[in-house]
Image 1 (cartoon, rainbow, N blue to C red):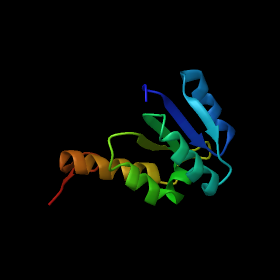
Image 2 (cartoon, helix red, strand yellow):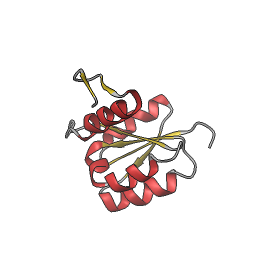
Image 3 (cartoon, rainbow, N blue to C red):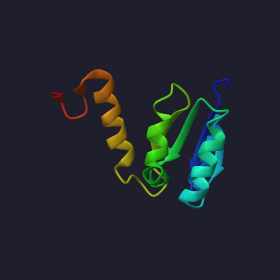
Image 4 (cartoon, one colour):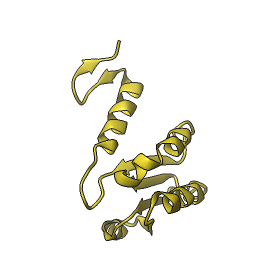
Length: 108
């Protein structure tokens, strides 16, 4: 892994990431996305995945998050967010900091 970054999504919106040097992969459904995520995890340090697909791959993403790499980051799809990405980010910040910085509540 040499710091490479990829994105997995189910629409043409992922192609915009190519302009930023991110390798873009299309997955029409969760089955293909799961297959791609497992494959890409071997060579990429950061993998963005649209939250519509990420929600369906939550079990795999949680297992991957137990390791340092790859970092799997849910992002809103071209259709907007379903809330999954925000919820995962909130959980990770609470875990790392012990404080909910998005809503200002301390963990007990």
